[in-house]
Amino acid sequence: MSDTLFSKIIRREIPADIVFEDDEVLAFRDINPQAPTHVLFIPKRAIATLDDATDNDQALLGRLMLAAARWAREQGLAERGYRVVMNCRDDGGQSVHHIHLHLLAGRRMTWPPG
Ligand code: 5GP
Image (tube, rainbow, N blue to C red; front, side, top):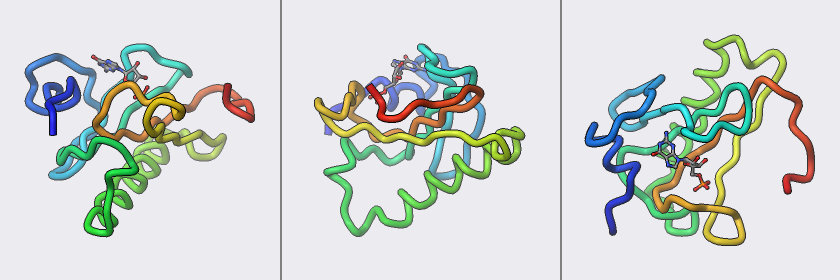
């Protein structure tokens, strides 16, 4: 698969404000935040889109979600709540083809999303 800027962030080739890392997951602040807290949780093993994920990625996807929830709890964001979003391809609004979970917090979210 092609290299994305998120792979470059994982390899520290371009800077990012990293807030969490373990052996499989990296999380960093979005460069164009849409909420007071806007963090992207990405797997270190690149998967282009959610549609490209397979049963072999089940544990990794769960880890991504739980890493976001744990970080939000640790940051004191869980009680008021937050939103997690994964955009898929063009109609979903995906611009970087390395799956990422957006964690948005610190303001009241609206529904439906635009
Ligand atoms: P998508 O639109 O694919 O769901 O989300 C991609 C996100 O990556 C966007 O919210 C965008 O602001 C963010 N982004 C794009 N380039 C960079 C970058 O170089 N650094 C960081 N930290 N975020 C980026």
